[in-house]
Image 1 (spheres, rainbow, N blue to C red):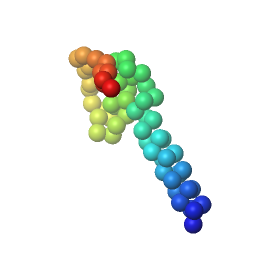
Image 2: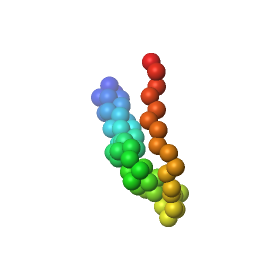
Image 3: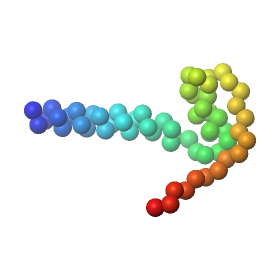
Image 4: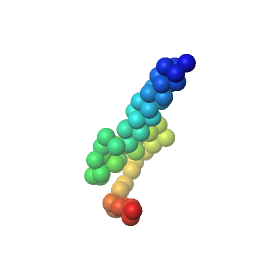
Length: 60
C-alpha cells in the first residue's frame, strides 16, 4: 500500500510540473507572449497586440 501511494504522489508531481511548465517555456518578449496566448484554444485565431510588458517582482 505504501508503494502505491508513493507512485501516485510521484506521478502527480510529474503531471503537475508538466502542466505548469508550458507557461514558462517561452521568454517574456512580445513574440513569446503572443505565441503562448495563441497556443490556448480560446485565442487560437485571434489578433493580439501587446501594449506594455512589465516585470513584476514580489517582495518577500
